[in-house]
Length: 69
Image 1 (cartoon, rainbow, N blue to C red):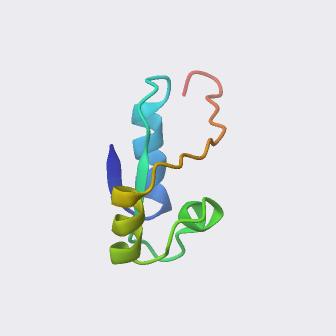
Image 2 (cartoon, rainbow, N blue to C red):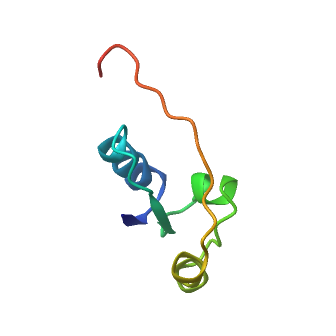
């Protein structure tokens, strides 16, 4: 699953996918795109789409849930 948006959108997608084992594709379209930058994803849509379509590499990121929120 891939989502187009900024850090807030990527946060919501990660929350929805947490624990499912489904890979998350990131298509940056926000102001800062801090998560995409940290993951090495290009900051504009077309290069990010090309990377998503052509790369078989995956990176792991830690995710945590606190206080059942």
